[in-house]
Length: 136
Length: 136
DNA sequence: ACTCAATTTGTAATCAATACAAAGTTGCAA
DNA sequence: TTGCAACTTTGTATTGATTACAAATTGAGT
Image 1: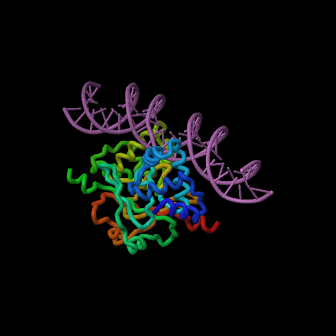
Image 2: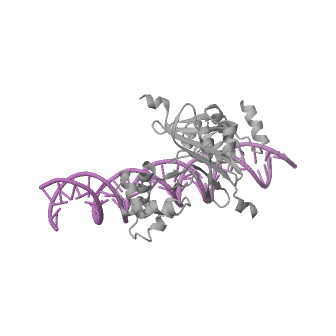
Image 3: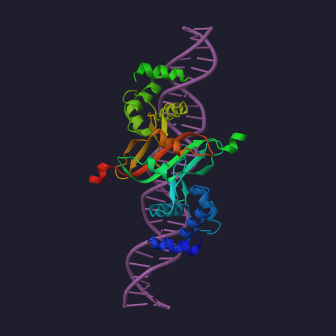
């Protein structure tokens, strides 16, 4: 997605397309690494010398509320952000700490939905050792 | 589960059945309310006047490592504990903050499992407004 | 009882996240 | 363009859950 497209996307959601917001969403769309707030800050302060950690949190909350990103709490330590809005699960390696996406079929996801509630969001978190670390 | 049963359960897992550990596991098995560390502390300090918050965390980690309880991170704020080891998902109401269990069929859970990883644990978190809050 | 290791406990420290107010920016109307 | 009001960003101070740590206590085996 180009910055132009991000700008109009934000506008359609009623969010002022500020430089910082565009940069954060752009970064998350480009880097599907589920970064923490700190990682995001360190990356973007290069581009915006006055960038602030508070802005990361403010922006993330704004984008999450608008359904443009999701907040991942698979790691109890700190929250992570993901611009991948299509259906998928997250796998965290207990060895290297990396977080990987894995596909979940539409059918499998629908089967999960609890009968007595009407969930707005649904997250699937798996934990174990990733293939790479298993080889070690 | 009686305290006797909890005691031998701990023994079979190679965990010293101390008063505090028995009390924590007993509380979690009796109260399926997904309490926070603080809630657990306030409840148990009544019984053990010298009870400490640190013990809550120590004990929880020990029990979780042994597979006797699970740590729930559906709420980014603070972690919660659950002695329900059978298969189920968690629903958090964004209004009242309560967390409810909901059933997940064996089949549905197996369908989730990612092909490229071998997960050790799997959590399903749903968020929305619970029936009770929807009536308001 | 005695001893050594495991556990508990209280306090201090850590650190992610938030509160807040000042400074900066943007949109809009005249 | 100018000015104003609302919104955003930013830096600092604060909060609050969790962990580190060392002293005190408990427990198991001899």
